[in-house]
Amino acid sequence: MKRFGIIILSILFPAMLFAQSEPAKYKAAVALFEKFYNQNLPDSISARFSAAMKAQLSPAQFKETTTQLKAQLGNLTTVEFSTYNEPLAVYKATFKNGVFALNISLNSNNEFIGLLLSPYQQPAASAAIADPAIAESPILLKTLTGTISGTVAVPTNVQGKMPVVLIIAGSGATDRNGNNPQANLNTNTYKQIAESLAKNGIASLRYDKRLVGQSMGNQKEESLRFDDYTDDAIGFINLLKADNRFSKVIVLGHSEGSLVGILASGSSEGNVNGFISVAGAGDPAEKILKEQMKSQPSYMADALNKMMDSLRMGKLQKKVDPVLYSIARPSIQMFLMSWCRFDPAREIKKLKIPILIVQGTTDLQINVSNAEKLKKGNATVAIIPGMNHILKEAPEDRQQNLATYSKPDLPLKPEFVTSVVGFIKGLK
Image (cartoon, rainbow, N blue to C red; front, top):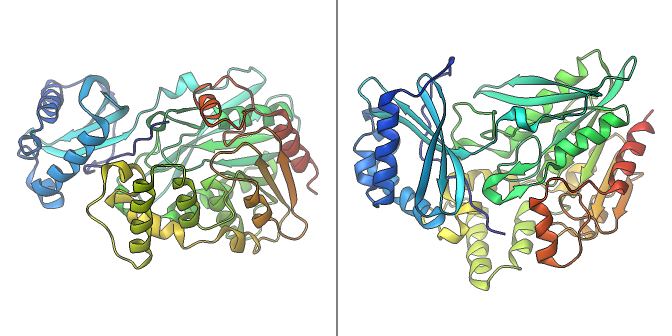
């Protein structure tokens, strides 16, 4: 499975207003971008930067970043206009090796004041739950750098208060439904969790991570820290706790989201009634990344090991091999440092609430030993045979297992749903 990271070239976007049609000057600007990018002429693009943008991103830095981008994604094959919200135009940019949203902002002199590649998401309406017995509504969390966008799913046949589950996504540019086009991840896992919970009388809230989908703001990727994810989860916990429709708040964190959920639950001052770790790591991120890299060619594993050793000493690496760009590009190295300082097994021991730990036996990313490392006190552990990292039925064979990542209609493992629902309904 090929994975391609998000390359942020620059962000300098004022607040968006109302949607409009594509202005002629933006059509011309994106055509020039496509032309110069494909002709390996990044200097011709940066020559059209505003003075403020040049101060923020020098032509030399832009050239280096764009060269790495080209090596990673290949030529830009098509560009399709999506939306315009003054002064930001968004395009669907299809590269040889991936699809992104190309965000462009221009000033009155037709100079670039913003240029960003972000995860491309299908329109939210197509991702809604179709079951008429489940009512969905949007929810927004305001932060210092923008807005986090989510969806609340509520069963319509329940009278009175009901429990609600906050679903926290895993690593990468994963959206509220469990999809990440840049990583060939099309699972609908979180959407299916929301549906399964609603069918059992349980509400849920799932959301797009920062810089993903509709959760966009003025934050730059290089300023992102792991604590930001925790703060977002805490914000949603507080909103759910204050909502009179809900009797209990349960946090469910998947993969990387498990650690986010552990930290948020521990910081929410009694607002969380239970925590569910799903395919969560029991070791710090550095150890997990190194372990996962063992399945890659030795030169990649060696390069990552050297990179992580450098970051552990607080030294950033500006020169990154393109093969590692998706997981260790310069703009996310501070995030990696902030993530690696947490030990999930140590943090989960601080929780004073009921805990369920769910782990599948055919998970290619996180093995069963991690569940044992996370187990504490009276925590319940559910080991589900034949369940992979995206919570679907899958064999141990790597290629067949990964093939399920692009089959969104595959159902969740029934035992997963049974374990989660049973835990929630057993909470006092």
